Image 1 (tube, rainbow, N blue to C red):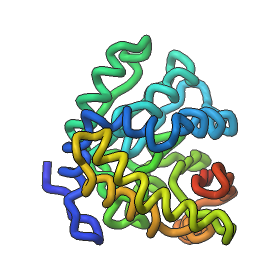
Image 2: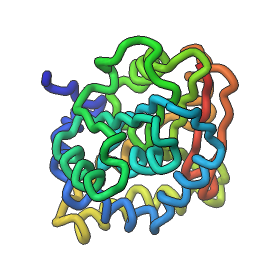
Image 3: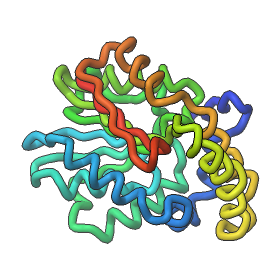
Length: 239
């Protein structure tokens, strides 16, 4: 596999996720205070998964969403989880193997900005907390649009920024100071790695800008839901 391009902050994100893979699930629970599973469950209640669906989870990481999608699908559906980090996928594969859905979930290593899937392949494409780590989010969205079937749905779960002036300073403190400290304390001293991830959270486009970008690419029926006082946003779009 070719080396991934570096992020705009000149960080090798693939190597970063390889490094944090062993602690990733535990850190997700700590940083989100366990809420990330509730966000995903809530947004999936708004999704309609057709019978025999082909589903792609981009930036699948340790496969939590891929497993949840398989659980909510019928037996004829297939879920593909794509990620560029072999270490994250290794953790994810162990989890998949312990479920009843191992035969319908396939984890593959690949580049979200140049996916090796034909046009119009998937009924549903999801990406959770991965778009902001792509060197070119627009290119990633264009690829997701390309591999979706006409009428297929994209669902993006991503960090966002609160716009309430009373809330935003506390959010900035949590993101900028508290979360990196969690990385140092709970993730074997990985302060710099979590500092980078927190900076991508703080500087990623706001929810309205992402919605407009989806429309520019060609997605229709774009709608947005927000959680945690605006710190988390879900974007739905149809090809």
